[in-house]
Picture 1: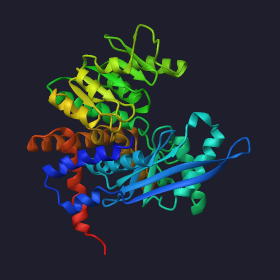
Picture 2: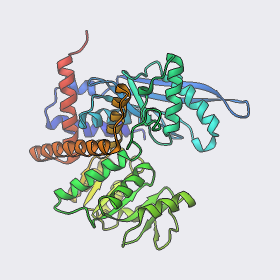
Picture 3: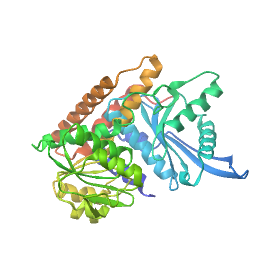
Amino acid sequence: MEELYESALRKFRKAAVIMNLDPNVQKILEHPKRQLIVEFPVVMDNGLVEIFTGYRVQHNVTLGPAKGGIRYHKDVNLDEVKTLAFWMSFKCAVMGLPYGGAKGGIKLDPSKYSIKEIERISRRYFSEISVIIGPDRDIPAPDVNTNSDIMSWYMDTYSMHAGYSVLEVVTGKPIGLGGSEGRTEATGRGVAKVTELALQKRNQKISGSKIAIEGFGNVGQYSALILFKEKNAKIVALSDSKGGIYNSSGFDIEDVINYKKTHGTLSNYPNAENISNDEMKALEVDVFIPAALENSITDETAKKMKAKIIVEGANGPVTDTADEILKQKDILVVPDILANAGGVTVSYFEWVQDLQSFFWKKEQVNTTLEEMMERSFNEIWDIKERYSTDMRTAAYILATQKIAFGIEKRGIYP
């Protein structure tokens, strides 16, 4: 993880060279604006106090308030959070959202704590970071191991200090408490849409296309479900942290989701072959969707990959060296800052709805999301063709153009 931020910078610098970016703008974008570390006590169910470490990093706020999720994981550290905040700045700019990038996290294994302990940890963390949080300053959202219930606690904690209900301070809330229709499946819907668009660029229809998906959390499940039900794709391989399953005829995704809920794993799913994550990456499929954690595709796995297209459902799933190998093999990679931007885009819709106290129907959310994903995909594709580069670099060029415009027009205070 220590090299994650440096890896992100290398990808950005590649775009900066191609577009001949002003070196002063480059310096600004290479450094986060704020990095907050908080250490706070929480009383456990047994009456003892534990100290937790939390982070909130705001990378850039040129185009608007900071936006980004909060994750709970035992491996959370400043380098990871800083990198994720960096990616969020570019992700928001790629989608044309009036936001900058942020990210947060608490270093803990949530499975080791009761619901009441998680609530107390969440509330205390949010009160600690609230010195830089606000609906016009920084708007958090769910991420790894956080959900709509935790967002409700965050919103309530902030509102108690404000003295009135501030629905727009976080997104990813339950419907009925300022949440948006379509938010839960938004990232998966965005992944499904750009998968369809990428296949079209390779002169292939999505209907009947063979797809493998690594990771079966929110992004993996909804990507699979929408591709299966709405796009008529054939999902032939799936995996979670315990391993994968394969069936060349494809899976009924609704049935697989029910099996996972019942058994807690995909392993030993009926009429399927158990395979490892590494074996799944070597399958001959049309599209491979990495939707787990960072750096899951290394140079070793990249050498074995036979997929025609990779759509990055996760953040940073491809290492630098793997990226080069995939390019040499003419495997089209749809980058994370576009592919998984559906979540932040519908978070933006939620924030707008909360500010206006006027809520959209699900059809409007889904249609607007898919239109925005298609617009950004086409903008990136045009830049890719113009500069004869890859989609990742093209996406960074598009995002950097937008942020750089804001920096240049605003100037540097004082």
